[in-house]
Length: 449
Image (tube, rainbow, N blue to C red):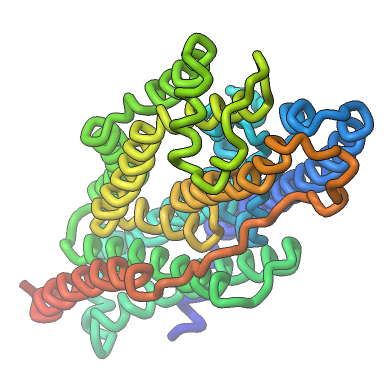
């Protein structure tokens, strides 16, 4: 029976054409993702070389430690995971590199690359997009008439009489379609692993499992709807409406709702307070500024109050006070970004498309969580760097006394990305719910109700 069903399925040129088109689109998305990953790695190499040349040029040009550190930049890099080629996520908007001086940090945190806004609006085609948006359309095209076609042509009664079980016959049809779709999915994943050189680790396994579950959801949904004995036109329109709701309407609505629930006016006020907190110090008594600075860093109090009209120690104390003035708003901004992410994930538990997208980005380390982690690490990195140089600035240490060769870019270590229960359970629960509904409908179909 399966041989006949397979021959019947692939006999249609439209079926073969759809599978070939989907494979070509998947292959193109893999190549685009690989190119994007290569650009990210090239940018890291350029930043590394630029920091070396920038450091050597400025060390040769300046004799004052304070003046030199006004210009020197220190890079913190979050290297892209190989899996990010399959799910670019926030990497095309938010940078994976933080290059900062030891001056005020808040004004430097959100600097990003100059990017064509038209390209950002269109987004990048990656394999995650193909699986999320295009695979369901092919599944709809293959399954919308799995039962209704025979019912409309009048052949269903003959099939029901000859087959041992009408439901098993429909399941066999569904299995054949799933066989080709899953074969194509695994072929694309294997091709991606080969082209992008993705290691066979737990994160890649999570990506595969998530893709399989997401595809199973659409097959379960289509089969459940098919057993309602509606016309082919009704089935295809309903499935397409569900596709629009799940892939476009609900994610956009959640995004707008999250933005409304957690507005971030602190995004502007943080920058303004940081600037005012620094610039107003020019008109403030130096001793007041340094007293606040020493209260925060008592280990530096031994350097006392400089008598000069201008000193680099006082200047960097002003810079630090600018960050201090914006600290409350900066923390509030960070907290609201965290709440936005948590709220989105809460809604995603019942929206398979949004859930899959978020966890694709999690596995590839291209999510909002990863960007916030980079910003938090940049804050710690900036604090450690300036605390190292503060004593040398106050002592006006000779520039040549420092081993500048060791100041190469710092790298952020990867995080654990696979948490199996939250990754799989929402999709498994929805699939089981659909299978339960399918079983109920199949009993009615079997008994002729």
